[in-house]
Image 1 (spheres, helix red, strand yellow):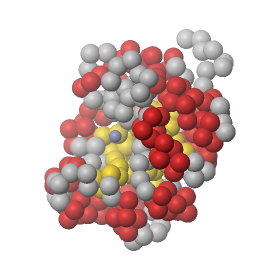
Image 2 (cartoon, protein in one colour; image 1 turned 60 degrees about the horizontal axis):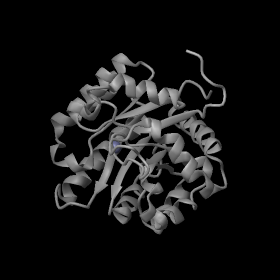
Image 3 (cartoon, rainbow, N blue to C red; image 1 turned 120 degrees about the vertical axis):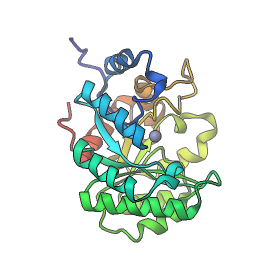
Image 4 (tube, rainbow, N blue to C red; image 1 turned 30 degrees about the horizontal axis):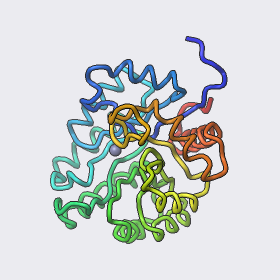
Length: 265
Ligand SMILES: [Zn+2]
């Protein structure tokens, strides 16, 4: 396959390509994403059945990297049997991060206690493995900061699809967290979010789609795919006085350094 040399070089740092939304045409979605310049993907396995579907995806595509963890909305499932399975899966699949983990207080369940237990248990696993963490956070900025203050020596932290308070943005900048940006920030209603994002330095930004979720407002369908990243980058680059292509290149380099990806093209 010959590639046009001017294609942007993009890492999609948060995808769910194993999702059933892609069962009918997964291979063509991946191919179209590569044709749009997305040369590397991090697929997030967020529940035991998703660890298995992520494994199958990686068997098909050895160059897709994985993150493995238990989503905070599933925290009630966190018990010693799950810990054993999670540790075994991490040893087996060699993911580049533990995630997505964190706090989601936008619903009443699981309880805050259950979420704390699952989050702490997985931070412990990440600390032991020396792996970065990919964090899902909703309506839990202060709880997240309080928990991380107990863990000063963790490997780098990624705040995925950042959507938090000014305090969280400032804390993230001070701690040197990486911040995932994608379709959410391109919405017309996201002006307050964009005002927080400009506080994050460009060497801490990562591009992500969260496919099949969070389609940008100009998308043809509600199903998001990694191929939307060049348009997302073109929309968000000006926040940092960057062209879309420069934002792609910089975030690609950030992702490669953070996750130890094989190369920056
Ligand atoms: Zn996700």
